[in-house]
Image: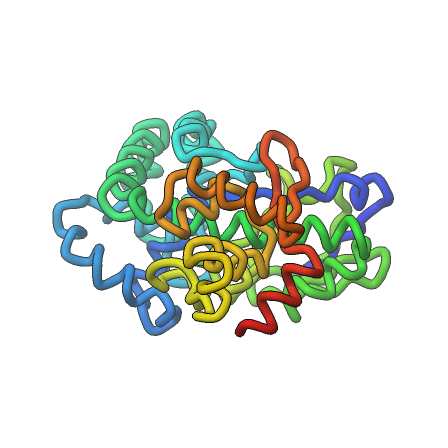
Length: 317
C-alpha cells in the first residue's frame, strides 16, 4: 500500500526541512515499549527505564499504540525550521477538542479521553511535559546535533541536485517520478494533491528506520530516517589520527575529523564537550590555514572542510 501525492511546481519550490523535539519525544514512547525494534537506542532505554514508574503515561500511551496510527495532534508538523519543545507543547495544548476527539476515536482505550477531550488534551500535554523533563530533555542536545547535521546535508543536496537527487537519497520507501511522490506506508493508501503550501521533510532518530506521513488538515509532512543514527549514543568526539593531532593539536584534529559533515559551531561544541568560544577559536585557526571554510546560513555559520582539509584528514587517517 502507498500514498501518492501530486506535487505542483509551487509545492516543489516550497519544500523545506525542519526537525521536531515533540516528534522525537512521541516516537520514543514506541521505542520504550518495543526495544527490539530499535536496539540502537538501548543505551538511552537503559538510562531512562528506572524513571518511568514515577510517571503517569497510561492515557498518553493509548494515543500512541505500539504500531499503526497515532493521534496526529500530538505531533503537529514543525512550523519553523528549529522549533523548541515549549513552543511545540503549546501547540499541542491549543489543539481544538473536537479534532483531538476525532483522532482519539480511531484508537482503542481512549474512552476517558473522548469523554472530555478538552480535559484530555490538558492531561496528555502535562504527561508529555513530565516525560520530557524526566526522560528526554538531557538527551535532546545529542539528538538535536544529529538531526541538524542531516538537515544541513539534505539542504545542500536540494540546492545542488534538485528534488530528484534529494528524494532519491531519503529512503527506498520514497519514490519521486517528477510529478508524484509515492510513499510506501502500510497504513496509507490513496492519491492526493498538496495545496500549494509545500512539503515539510523531517528527519527522525526515534522513528528510524521507518517513514511516516501527515497530510490535511495538517501541513503535508514526510518523516524520514536520519542518517548516522548508529553514532547517536557514541561518547565524546570522533577519534583523531595521532599524526594529525601531532601536527595541528588534538582538539583541532578532532574538529577537522568531525567536519567530514558540515556543522555549526554550536553543534561542534556539543559534540566535543567544549565551549562555543573554544570551538570558534579552533575553527578560526583551521580557516586561516585553508583547512576549513564557513558559510553563513541564516543566523549561524556552517563550516566544512576544504579540499585541502579533506586531503590532510584522509592522509593522516
